[in-house]
Image: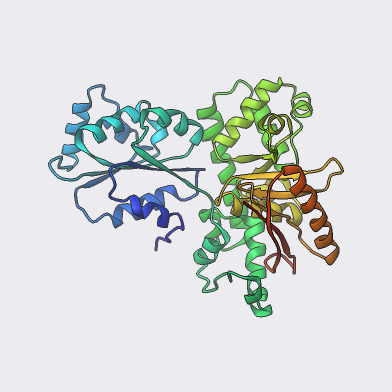
Length: 398
């Protein structure tokens, strides 16, 4: 049985719009499964699905004469006199595909649904060529809510802290522990034993390294980018000292920045910049880095539960909006600032003294950011590992 993803609610409103729907994200997050799910939802028989990992299917789209491509589609059963739907999986494998898609949208009003694994390539290829003709959606590993659905759990996470009873917490806790330790890749979640989950995570990393790094990346020093990946995994939630990293790896700062950009563009990592009212200051300060999935981070870096917990919160917040962080010279800081309006301090265990320190930090941050104070509230959500707590310091600015 195919499990629907939360992103489907965003895509559904564009199922019959003229624009192409592009689903991108890291490998093994479930893009192909989602594409198949949408294929079955389209109420038309005038549709085709091509898996472009099959070289024979790629051949159809490599013709220089686009009308010959049209003939191939007709042979496959597509009727161009009616509204037609074309589903293409793994589009980054066909060079020049944006031009083909644009041609068929403009000349035949074809509705396209496309998936691709590497935004590093997709955004460069599709940004200009399909301007005004596409909607891009990013698919990430499962959120904890989706994880519960995939585990066939009837439990739903309460929307407010006051609704979290001890019985709900006792039920959530072991599931959240599993989610932190093994992550949210569907292929891992469905495994039933610890050993199977670990082998699945090993295979995930191997697949990423071979298909993204070796085949798509085309780097001169593959060993260096491998070492960089391992170093970044060990530095989850830490600020990146580019100068020190480049010295340790024996490469120039521009080369290191290129590697980091590639890893971010292929969804393996995500960097967030410090909060600043001035762009020039923001650029000078060090970014913090997070990994796409806590399971991968735990498997290869053996992080402590606090770091895994922080990375998990990052994975949830990144799907809501833009993230920054705030840190003072003393080291005290706020872990995440969402859309420059709401701040989150992540702690595995919280005490009243933490709340007092956060109040003081919030006041300082408010002054430094020259923002208008609107309201402040504290929420204690009992979702975590071994009675760990997540303390949210919420600041809303006009």
